[in-house]
Length: 233
Ligand SMILES: O=c1ccn([C@@H]2O[C@H](COP(=O)(O)O)[C@@H](O)[C@H]2O)c(=O)[nH]1
Image (cartoon, rainbow, N blue to C red; front, side):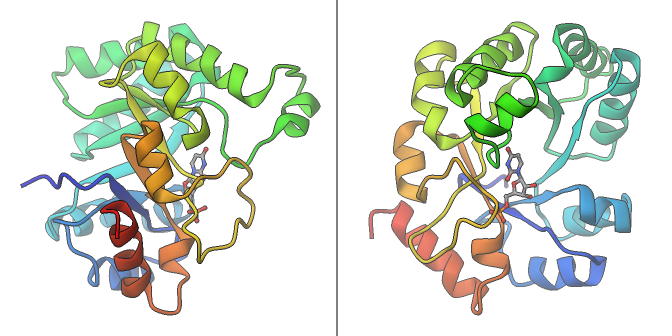
């Protein structure tokens, strides 16, 4: 049974063993898991089989960004591994996103396809350095509308932008939000942050949480504290 929890735990580990050690302490009824660039580059598709075998739905967070034909092929390859969700960078543009959408539809693959807007580690000064004078909020809006119009099921954004995107793109449009920091966690490299309960109230459909759980001295206690915060405890 798919979980109805909004939590996605980011398994940012440097080895398959370390990732599976964590997965074995988690419950697929209580969260989904995210596999990102470091773990996938080290372990390859084996990690996906191992997590699926344990009953987890997996978000493969490889943030594809390339020419349309290349991204469409990569998205098909990811979806054929049975992942629940996969993503591209919205800044790859409309034709790239449409090619990915068309490939999934043509192959009748039900994997959710979302687009990264502005990384949650970025603030206005970071955007300015790469030639974008818009504020993070305005740039997220622009890319989210483009992603919606290009057939994406949702976006990755900060929870700070979720309520505006709910107005613009509707509540069925997924708002997957990293940069989640419960009161006990440090910001680290994240810049556009929000606490778990506030993020849910703002309209996030899914909360991505990594280090606040995986680097905690007691990961299960950290997860329970986040769940309690989400249920108003
Ligand atoms: O804009 C983005 C897109 C992806 N991420 C990923 O989410 C997790 C967050 O981990 P924390 O340890 O909770 O900061 C991580 O895997 C990132 O690659 C993101 O943070 N922001």
